[in-house]
Length: 290
Ligand code: 13P
Image 1 (cartoon, rainbow, N blue to C red):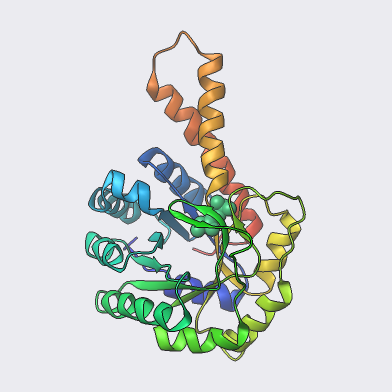
Image 2 (image 1 turned 60 degrees about the horizontal axis):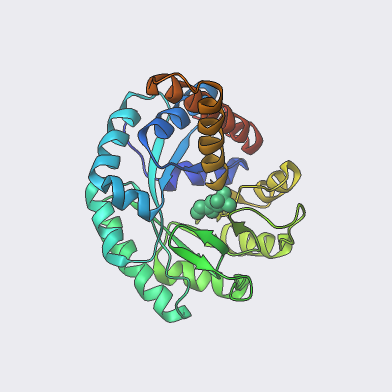
């Protein structure tokens, strides 16, 4: 299918009350495995890269591989840059062929967050690329973005609409208590009412600016379903994929210590990643929505 940005895909998800999984990958094997899951479930898909792997592999390389795989696939696939806190790097990735860009200026004060986000929105919109902004700060560690628990701030619903309109974003990530990385408790405190209120203010009359849930790893299935039912339309999952990659590699090498065949290791990792993503697609309700 032709490459797509995230906007229309997520407006549809918002209207039909399901979410599209946005999965952070660090290499081509993972990218292929995630796409295989989306194809088998006939689900739309967002592939995302954090800034460090993007810089390491080079945005042109990632976007080049994405372009070939997305055009071959029978489902719509978007390539998203996750949590860039540098305006210039957002532009670099937009030029390289990413189709959705997240500028994370959430550590700045409200006005500066708007200004930086607006600069990225205008640059990207001229190129047909959609943009995600963040209001409030999601705690935990996501690549170069580190937010301590006592620094994290939840999104103010009364400011959400003003932020979204003035920054001209397409997608809003409101901080509602989810966290990047592994949760320290099996029952993290999330502010469901806050999400509901933000969804009502922004998308109550008609879907306008789809909402993004960060920190998917470790949430219970019930919590995920509730967040989706309250309006979460893009659901980010990163740490779980890293665990699947490393644990599968470790187990495979432990069981095949005398084998020197990287291709077989790739097959084992791919199968594990595909199974992980198929489970997420079922949970988010995006199967058969492509
Ligand atoms: P997790 O690493 O907790 O799954 O969070 C992913 C995320 O929100 C990426 O932006």
